[in-house]
Length: 261
Length: 220
Image 1 (tube, each protein chain N blue to C red):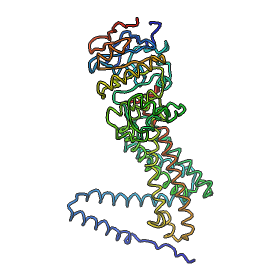
Image 2 (cartoon, rainbow over the protein chains, first blue to last red; image 1 turned 180 degrees about the vertical axis):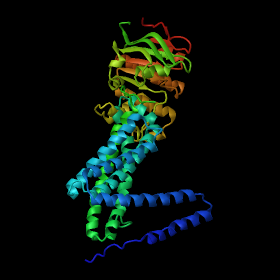
Image 3 (cartoon, each protein chain N blue to C red; image 1 turned 60 degrees about the vertical axis):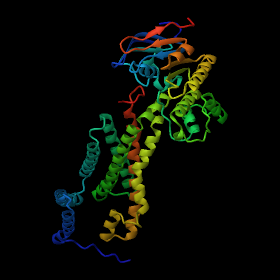
Image 4 (tube, each protein chain N blue to C red; image 1 turned 90 degrees about the horizontal axis):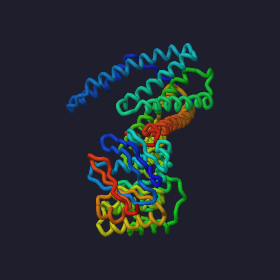
């Protein structure tokens, strides 16, 4: 099978893609929707961020170093943790924030190491060309999963507070009293990943696979990676979310198994 | 502390709601609590069930301080029926069994479930959706759920507030009879002086300004 190599885009060609942004500007102007600033800011910000990332990645890929790879992974983890905590800053207790840090780090790192060292078997073990993009996918998806999970858990514990207390009054352990909330929450958090798996290859071609195909990789190799990474993402999301929920529900109770106000 | 006291309270304070210098609740008797709204009756029952803890002072159950008893262990012996009990998703059978499941006890037969419904005068099928029950029926379902748990102590917060007078008396009679037959302790908040006078061995009056007053017990 003949697979052609990717066509390089010049800066001018990338600039031509800004026509789409102009098109959005025209639409919102006609409709009278005042979103110009945000669209312009996000377009410029994305462009600059990606240019910077491109240069950094070129440098890192040329001179692989285990400390640099680990440093970048830690930065990604820190950014993901900050994003989740910042989103729920006002409603989360200190203990719950600690749970998020531990769950996200443990859930993503364990799946990442298994995926890279056991499934893909990269060499050297810190090869940034594999480590960084795959870590990005696992951490990014797990971050979304945890955000959904935290939101759903907080809602559940607020709306169903009286039912949880009724269960405690009847002699239930906090674990039993929150079981249905935890199960519903876990389901809500992993559903987007499951739905994405359902449509993959038919409704849309996933980003990583598209990227590989564009860069000249055989579609058969690309799908092998895509299948494996989807299971990696599923595992990482599920593990991070269940750890958050399993440790998180306890922060709603005190040592006397009473609901905290 | 009275030797027959099952619960003993000492200098118990809870926010600005309750202030009890000393109080005993006798074992294997029916204690009724009367008092106006806001006098802390519900808070008192919640403290005994340890779903909340006092800000200061001590509560003893069988001479052991509540702080030293595991909350879940205590709640399985000292069951509280709230004034507005919550009903779980599912049918009547699922709701009856929910308490049993929470307490990790072995599941009773369907016949026992029907007997319990009969005791609380709830003439409904076990399969009926609990959501469709009226307020009074839900209260009786919750009462049946507590009876099925067979605890040592029943803490009942206005267990018949949504019932008509005839059904109310009939149900209270069933509960007190059951308690007497099996040497159980009942602590019941009621709005009805008549019910208290008829069924209580001991009446405690709560008020907003004073410490609870204990009215003489007939059996003493």
